[in-house]
Length: 167
Image (tube, rainbow, N blue to C red):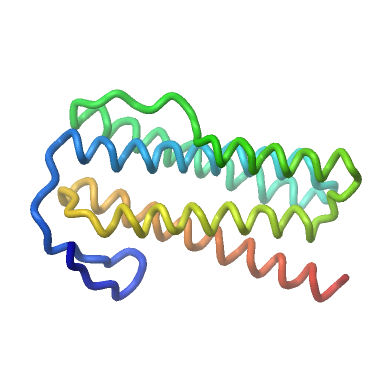
């Protein structure tokens, strides 16, 4: 499918319109992504000691939860059933964060590095979704959430860079 990418939120598709079941598939992929983000940020909050980092991760988890709720409403509007959970890869990633914490490798830098890898995956999934010829109402929600995912990624990256500079 041909598309132009000016920025994350303005990817334009030129292919045929998606059928409702295809829209639901795209939305369910993003719902799993949102759940992975929510659970991942909660796992990171559990493993850091800094109150500021705990609050940051808790806030990001709540944003992901809200994004998931928004996606579930769209899935229902397009006649679909919301996916049940996150992805297997997301569960493995969270497990790795907890293993690092249990082994004493839960420095803020280590947790931020893990969190950034998770955000890389999330941003890529939004880019993939925006390449689809989504209905306007769905595209506007997905584009706004994609921008939020990119902001999360950039903030985590900046915090990781600051932690690297301190270490």
